[in-house]
Length: 581
Image (cartoon, rainbow, N blue to C red; front, side):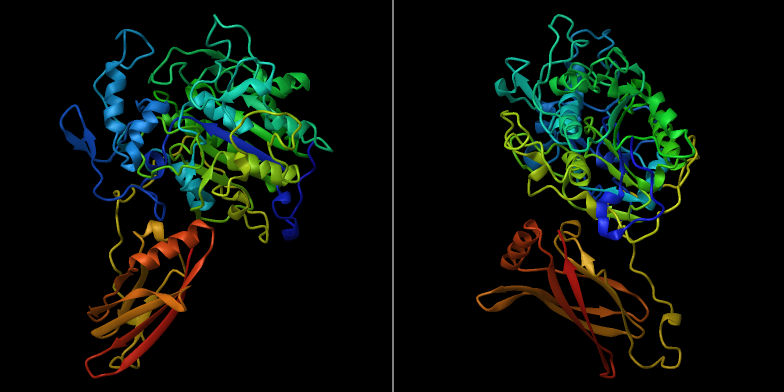
């Protein structure tokens, strides 16, 4: 049984203040599809228009008020076509091809209609609770699915950091990499014999740790939430239950789960609700996975609203229980579902990463209103579990006692960020944010690529006794992410009278004994009107900065501003800006 929650965090313990990790995985939505217009996030750029082969024109991103979506194909071939070598321009064409490939137009596994909606996006009007979680807790805008494929491989990665095909389903040494086509669970391919996944899952490390780490995989009874054909957009429902292997419930087919006698750990969601109903103590295990059914999965054509209601219910139950003060909820979507996203996925190995998906961290210790720009994948959940409960033991054939042929240790890749950055354990546990399960629509967001106008500084911000004396006002973010600012350093400047600005800077990086510099600029400002100043770098300086950031380093930049008015009076301002990955 998990330990009782503590009243306040001990900062020295770090993530070990988290005694309960709950991973809630939904289906088939890209980051831009749900959060592409979220303020401050790396969202949909201005001017995007994706080629539409059917019309010869292009489709721009648009606000889609529909609760039911179609999406597009989301297998390995579709991912390669959607990303198109980094151009990110194949989404519409792939959605149109999926309809044309339906062998039988009356087959319920196919879409019958003319709607192509992969360029549509949603905001707080359809998903106000998801946006509320992002506004109050942590939104991850560089979360990628672990490989460029569909649900079964994604869920194998979720619990084992690998997807493989095995010649002998009882011998891990016969398994080879299979990011698209691992063996199908028996309930999808009835003509195939029963199978096992013989490589290690994270449950083996949990069960064999001293002391063992408790876990459950909670299944919501109902229809299976994905299609056995990864190119299909809609499929006939397949029944799912606590003991039914399936593409969203792969653990029953893992050999180590069966060998360790842990099939009973895969149980109904009602068991989780029962565990949360004890007001005297937390009954949750240390690690929980929460698996939806087709109706609430948000997999097209399931209604978005039903999925949000279900997720809100799960989160509310945890928040109302004694478990809240020691819990971290990780909410994400398994793959992009064919919907548009503008970020080219980083290539970390032969499997991925795949396309970008939404990620949220909900916890009493989550940083408030924080956007995490680290490169992440669902492997980060395994890394967090291993660091929190297992002394950082990894799913590594060199140390876990079972030889297999996985290409690398996913949790140890240098590109993978660290979820501990999303927490602040110096704060007291934040109270629950209980949201309505059927919320009213939230406010509309600004359109893609929106840039707030430069503010007008009211006279009240200046010294009222010195109206004729030059005063310089600056608003500068002391930490800036270059990749979100078109590789520019930004600061907002204003004067109380008309002024001439001279701005220049230098970087902490040195080459042949000289500091790289930020290119200087001149600007003329009207009185009381602020302006955003963008500072660029030369190609050699930019390459040096990008290399430093890619290595995880922070690069300080010192920026100096001199303001000069018509009478010759001057003001000087200096700021140090830290450029971060």
